[in-house]
Length: 250
Image 1 (cartoon, rainbow, N blue to C red):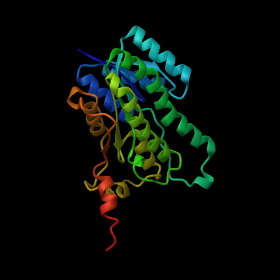
Image 2 (image 1 turned 30 degrees about the vertical axis):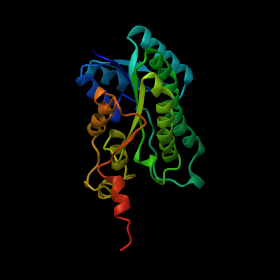
Image 3 (image 1 turned 135 degrees about the horizontal axis):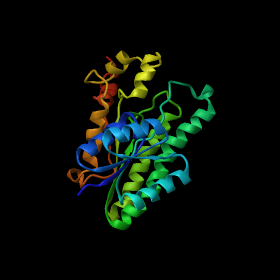
Image 4 (image 1 turned 180 degrees about the vertical axis):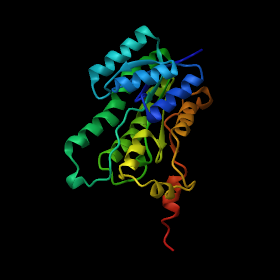
C-alpha cells in the first residue's frame, strides 16, 4: 500500500532527494516548503503534491497537517528536512536575529511538525518520523546557531522515540556530513566553503551526495528498519572517525 509521506524542505537539496526516493518506491509524497516556485516545480517533476508551509509558524504547520490528512490521507511518514545553514562565525559577533531564525526553522520547525503529526500516528498505532540532524549533533563546529540546533535535534529524536514508541511510532534521524546540496554549492561558489578542505576531513575523501542521505533515510522509515528507533545515523563519508583518528598526537 502506498504511504502518504510529508517532506518539509522538499523543494531542494536533501529534502528533494528524499522525496524522490519515496516517489520511486510508489509512495504518495507531499512536499512542504516556504519556497512556492521551487516547491511547485519539484512537485510537478516528481508527480507529488505541494503545500506552502512555514515550519516555524505553528498556525501554518497545524493548518497544513490538518489539510493533508483531510484531503490526501493519514500521514504515515514525516520527514523533517526544512533547515537553514550558516557560515563560520564567533558567538561574540554572530547576529542575534540570524541566530534566532536558524533556531526557529531548524529546531522549532522540527518540533512543531513532530508535535502536529506524531499524536495522530500514535492513535493509528503506526508511523515513522525522520529528522535531519548533522555531524554537528556529535561534535562542536564553529557554527554557534546551527551546531546547537542539530545537537538538540539528536536529543529530540531520542525523546520522541521513547514517548511514541509504545504506540508504534518510530522516530530516527540521519546525520549528514558535508553534503553537496545547492545550498552548499552556493557557499562553495561564493568562497565561503572550501571543497578540498571538506573532502580532506573524511576517510572517503569526498563530499556526501544528497541521494546517499536519501537512501539512509528511506531505509530508516521502511519495514526493513522495524526494530530501529531513537537512532541518529551518520551519513558522512567517514568524517566522524576521521576527525578522531587523524587528531591522534604523533
